[in-house]
Image (cartoon, rainbow, N blue to C red; front, top):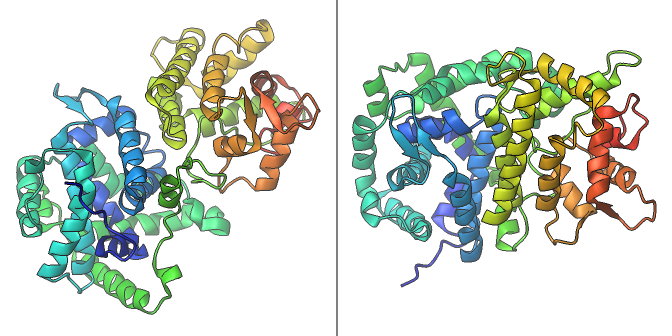
Length: 481
């Protein structure tokens, strides 16, 4: 028997869609990342340390897709998650095997989302009554049924969730490096969130205050069993901060119109309509493999070196540790596959292309043999290589670019149209006019057909690395320098 999915007026959609759910988002991530299986996958495959806001956005957007779509959209999102997670497996630092498709891990991640929705009401002084909890849990389980996970792994009823949480905290969870980073380190180094807008230059001054507040709020909001097991203390000031924020936001939201109170689930609507998730105005914190940054100029005649350094810093170094390694290239491939929702065959082609590029980078740039490439090694080797060998880029970079082009060519026409180009390069940091300008610059045949061939695409990236001035079209992939 097929269950009925929650509709627009369901308690689940209203609760999950309310903007103050963001107050428990960091708490949710800590709980999820305290699972050793989740933490191991993050340590090996994720770039959450360098891109924490992207991690939050991905989690929230995937939640919207799962819980706000129709059945077809829901199943597409589940399939996308399974394709992405299939590659996340290995052995952790203690020699334990892990896989992101472990049913117990997946159930934990899902149930923590439900528990966070109920915690939002409890922390705000307006807990759901038993009937509401039963209704919310029934709606939640209707969605979870589509994952085809063993039913016995879930709490049987809403009343069983607290016991499940406490049992899992005491028997399974660990104080992982990922949980510690989320609580005490990551926000002190995090880049500016894109939503700051014109306040971004002030982020270095704002960041320490935000980091202290988020740590205090999260410690205050975590389940008592979690704090007790791992020796985490909630100060009186943290308790006051939590009470003030949750109660204050609850009262504020009740006076706001729905368009301001609830987050508009655009990603979910796009999935339900059968559209790709990579819309022209996508998540600006997602560093896609094809996004080429505008370099910082450092003087006449140095624009080529500046472009190469900017490419390393803003695109390649996904983990933000100052080095390029295999996981950085894997993360870039993952982001392409995630945004464009590729099937297994095309996903494998993207990973193969980026792996070929990494093998070329490692053999031609890793001068000290430590299996990683610094920015200095990359810049020096790249400039020397393209000056010495006309086929240098073709032997490495072009393998990834061809895979990238064919992934973005969603209609299989052999060309990129303007919409496909924007889906690949677009984001809130790039003005649509600049994207249109870059697209026109790459349409090198000049026939005005509004299409980019694969060779034009490759030539543009070649120009980006080889041109000695900014007047060449390829240096303007994302608009005028």
